[in-house]
Structure formats: C-alpha cells, structure tokens
Amino acid sequence: LRAKYTRYKRDGLFLLRDCTTSPHDFSLSLVCGDKCYHYKIQLIYDIYFSIDSGPQIAGIESVISYYQQLSDGLACILSNDFVQGQPPPTAARRFGSTNTLHRACKQGNFDIVKKILSPETLVNRPDVNGKDSFGSTALHEASYFGHDDIVRLLIKAGAHVLSRDTNGATALHKAAAGNRPSTLLILIAEGFADYEERNYTNHWVPLHEAAFHNSTACVQVLLDCGAPLRPRTDQGKTPLDLAEEVKSEESISLLRDYIVPPAESRRSDWLHDQPKFDRIAAKQLIESMQNGPRNGMFVVRHSSKNLQNYALTLYNDNEFFNYEIVHLNDITYYIDDGPYFESLDHLIDHYCRIPDGLPTTLTCSIDSLGQINNSRIQPFSLKSAIYKAKSKCLKFDYTILLQK
Image 1: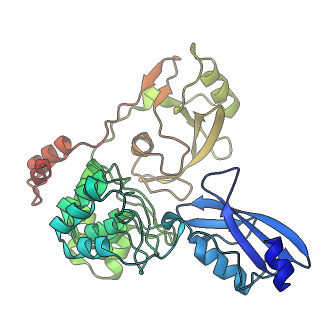
Image 2 (image 1 turned 90 degrees about the vertical axis):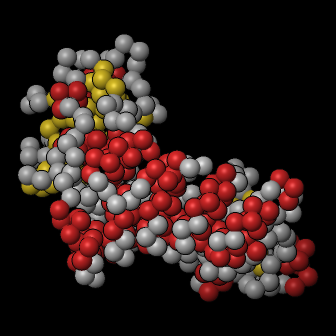
Image 3 (image 1 turned 90 degrees about the horizontal axis):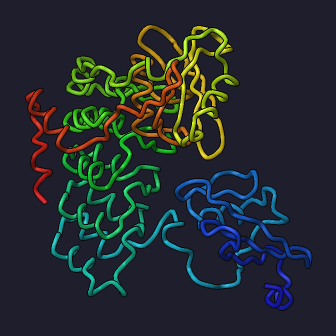
C-alpha cells in the first residue's frame, strides 16, 4: 500500500484484507495525507457490515462503494484505485455471478444439479452458497419454485438455510411466498431452519409472506409447526393485517378462524407470585441451585415497574438477563418487538422452542418450591405434523415428506 501511494500520491488509495483478530471481519487500510489509517469492518449479522458507529451495509462490496462516495468518519473517501488482491468471499457479498447451478435450480433440472454437486466435481464446482447477479442463492431459487428434491440435495451439500438474498429474505420466506408447503417442511425438518426467522429489512417472518401472498397451505403448515399466530413487522402488522390489506380472502378466513392450541407449559413450573420477588431474588434463587445455574434456566415474576406486567429472568453464559413481559390485555402478552401471545403460558412455550431474540432458548425453570423443571416443550417433528394433519383432516399431505 505504501509503495503504491509513493508512486501515485493519491489520497484514498486503499487495501482490503482479512481481519487478524476475527475470522468473520475485515480490515480496511487507506492512505491519506501521507499517513496510513486502519479500520475494522465488523460483521454485524448475515452480510451486514459496519465501520465503527457507521451505517450497517449489506455486502462487503457495497461497503466499499458507500465509502467511495462519502468519508463518513474515515480520514477521506476511498479512491477508485486500490491494491489488487483476491475477490472477497462470496458469502460476504450482496451480489454475485449467475452460474450453471443457479440456472439449474431455478429450472428444476435435478440431474444437472446432482452432477454439479457430486464428489467428482468438488474441486471445480461453484460455491453452493454463492449468490447470483440478483443476490439470490441456489437454495433461494429452488425453494421459491418448490423443487423439493433439489432443496434436499443443496441442504446435504452444505447450503446455508438462513442465508439471505439482497432483500433480506431466507429460503423459508421464498418458499412461503411461492406457496410451497412441502418445501417449507423440508427446510424446517431437515434443514433445521427457524420458522420465526425475520427479514432484517421489514421484520417479516415466513407467516407474513404466506398470508400476504395468500399461500394458505403454507399458512397452515407454519401454524402446525408452532409458529405464533401474531408476529409483528417493523410497522407492528400481523399476518392477518397484511392479508386484509391485499384482500387475501382464504388466508383471512384461516387466520381469523384458527384456534391456538392449549399451552404446554405450566405456570407452577416457573411463576413466582410473591410480591417482593424481584430481579435480585430471582438471581439469587438461580445461583443457589445445587450444581449451579445452567444455560437457559429461568423464572417468571411480577414486574417491579408495572404490577400488571411480568418479567423474565434468564441465565446464559455467566450472565443474567431480565425482560419485561407486557400484559397489554386479556389475550395479548409480548416481549419487546416479539410476537403477540394469547397467554403468558403461550409466550413461555414459544421461547422454549426458539430464542427469537433472547440469548438462548428457555430450557429449565425453578418453581416456588426450589425444584428444577425441564421444559415440557417438544421440538417440531414430521410425525407430530402428520398426526395433526390427520386429526384436522387438512388438505396438505405431510406424509409425502417421509419419502426420501
């Protein structure tokens, strides 16, 4: 970098390199006024990066483009000249190049995809998580078009089920938008995808996509998997709100008529009703357990700020976390910007299944007698989905997913 600057004397000359202290971050070195400056480009989540307190930008190449237009805290703007090296990794980019794998997944050409992903082509095959020129991965394409056999191939080949396209959507969002219920279940049951994963740009979860696109089979599948009925977008809209906006009549009927199953957890396992049981008492109780606290250990108590509300005290990785559980009305409980729940018990059920913003899932609780109770919540399984389908006479045949 210094040698090239000495030759051309151009401020903003830069070099991008791997960060020596973190495998997921990058370092930016630039020269301005004959002085060298170094900045850490930190990975915030997925493909979003940030320098210091600057904006969070999708794609490492977009970070460079942004600072070529505006210094925004750097010593100067980046020039169009740089010290050439290797292209940045595809997983860090917002856009890539469309290749044969992308096209075959979109077209549903199983034989070509199988050949590309075969062990014989391991050295020269394209990155299974690489993005096309529109910012989508092969799994995004296969999921949207419902090519289930290809989706399975991609998952086995190491495709990231929660990788996001340029609009912030995961493969689950794409399957829900395309009304591909069987694809949804494959991603959840075999790819272990989180059915409550949010789109970072608008906080839509797959159920929002399904309701908006009137994908009623996907609405039913997601609800059967345990997805909350009333998740919220960044504007506070539920799936029913979106369905009503676009007049998705079938989805409106399904969401309005849906009866939320009874909660599985029991208040006697985790609720402490004592008036003076505050966060300090909760912390002391968890710490007093014979073998020490475990990750995911929790209790629920009345809020010290508002007696109408509750509070969750949670232990994870040597830290204690406290969350206000807002009791809005008789059928609405929530934490922060999380989903609305019909009861306190349903809220606890949800966070026993997935973290959804918490540092970990709720794994065990301490009751008022000081006994530890493991979570009663069972993870989603195809067998339970098939049982629900038969008992409710649902139109979607879950048993097709057992055919491997």
